Image (cartoon, rainbow, N blue to C red; front, side, top):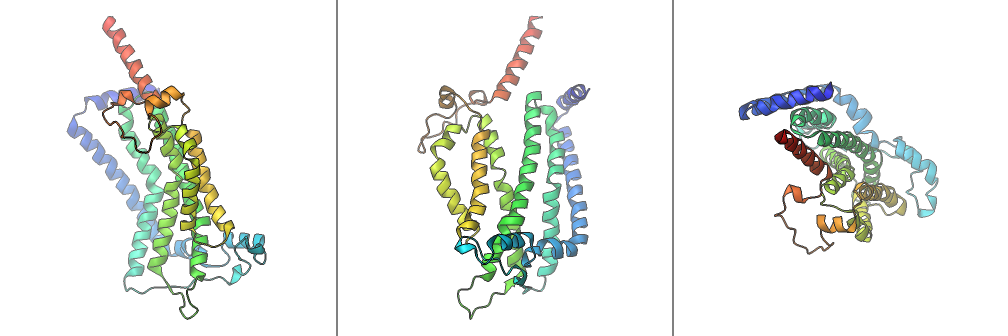
Length: 322
C-alpha cells in the first residue's frame, strides 16, 4: 500500500508544472518556518531556566564532568590528569558590558536552539517534497542517511557540551598571563565559544555520513584512508590540541580519541572495491592529480543509481518490445 501511494504521488508530481512545484516548495518552507517560529517562542519563554541549568552549568564546580575527573585524578594524578580535586571551588562569573547584549543573546540563543531541535523536522518536510522524484533504491539509502545523520549530529552536540566545552572553559577561565590581570569573562565571549564548539562538534560527527555518501558515489575509496592514516593522526592531534589547549596528555587524548574513532568509522563505512574498480572510480592516489570533471553521472561508481537506471531501462525495453 505504501509503495502504491508513493507511485501515485510520483505520478502526480510528474504531472505538475514548474509553478506547481514552486508552490509545493513554498508550502514546505512555510511549514518549516512555522515549526522554527513555534520552537523559538517556546525556547524564549523557557530561556531563563535553560540558562541557569544548562548553558551556565559548566561555570560551576558541580558539573558532572568536573566531579568525575575529581574522583579519577585525586590530587592531580601524577601530572597525567588535570587537577580537578577542587571541583567544588571552581566558579566562573560572567559580566555584561553592552547595554542590549542580554536581550539579543536571549533572542539569538532561542533561535539557534530552535534550528537545532527543528532540524530533523525540516529535513523530513524537505524529504516529503523530494522523495517522489527518486527511485525506490535511492529512497532506502536516503532514509538510512537521514536517521544516521540526525543521530550522529546530536551525539556530537552531546560530546561538545559534556566534554569539549567544559574542558576548554576550565582551562581558559583559570589561565593567567599574569596574576595582576584578573579574568573577567563577558557574556558575549562565553556564548560565542559555547555555540561554536558545540555546533562544530555536531558537524564533525557527520564525517562518517559524508564519507559513506562520497564512497557510494565513487569519489572516495578505502585505500585513501589507508594511505593517509599517519597524516590523519598528526592532523587530528593538532585539531584536538587547538580545541582543548590544555597542557596535560589526558585531556588531549579525551578529545583526540573520539575524533580519531570517527576517522576509522568513516574508513569502515566506505564501500570496499577491487583495485580495478578503485582505479576506475578515482584513479591512482596522487595529491597533484587533476580531477577529470568531464565524466557524467553514469561514469561514476554509484551502485544504487546504476541498478535503478538499468532496471528502468529493462522495463522500458520490455514495454517497447510488447
